[in-house]
Image 1 (cartoon, chains in turn orange, purple):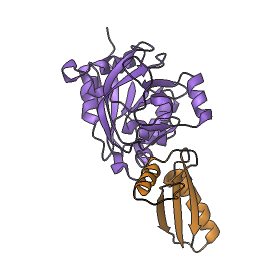
Image 2 (tube, rainbow over the protein chains, first blue to last red; image 1 turned 90 degrees about the vertical axis):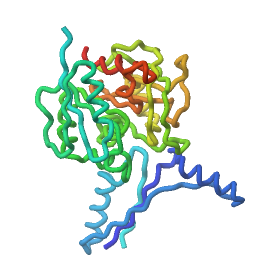
Image 3 (cartoon, chains in turn blue, yellow; image 1 turned 120 degrees about the vertical axis):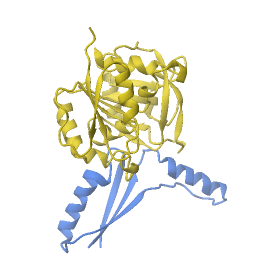
Length: 79
Length: 227
């Protein structure tokens, strides 16, 4: 199975990279951009075929290492 | 007679301030020992652990996020939880927040720049094992050099820091008024834990020991551990 993890700064925590990209889009004439958030995507291939087990394992990986939950939220998609 | 301190200076792949840190404490008359990250124990009878600056593990994932899982950091956690003194400078501060030994987190600077310059700092609290030789409200001037120094903590956490005197330094102007340098919450440059034995700061006191190089304010900061 493959886990696709997206890690983003929490709502309310200023995202300086997103803000810079937003500003650049404005400068290039892309009107109507309300907000830009930049995060990172982590793709993990797992040995298991057990979706429940995979989800639990990946959640623990996120909580332990992959996200810093003081400033970041994450989403997990198992395929 | 001034007690000679025995200081452990940690070294991870990518650390680059370990020799400056050794030089600084040895210049003050103390003994230091480099400790490789794979060590599972710290030297015996040490008075202080310093987690120096640099780019441990290339700052991959997040600054400090990989180093915090090094074998030596388990020993540092035990040492700190037992009341041992720990100082994290720059990347060391990032490692200590990632390890949960200090509250908050350090984000990319708001202007996305690597900021490297001398910076004024205001001493906010000095009733601790680190800044006790500095005056409250005193302005120090020492180098900063970081890309991820934007200190973040939520409102509740901030209130605890403030109530318990855990904010030790703020970026300031020459009069001690806070200034925005990297986007840190209320311009925080350094904090300590609730028990006041673990300290972290983004600025580099070990680079401010000689007036001819721009500042010797680092001396009084580091000498605090002699008290």
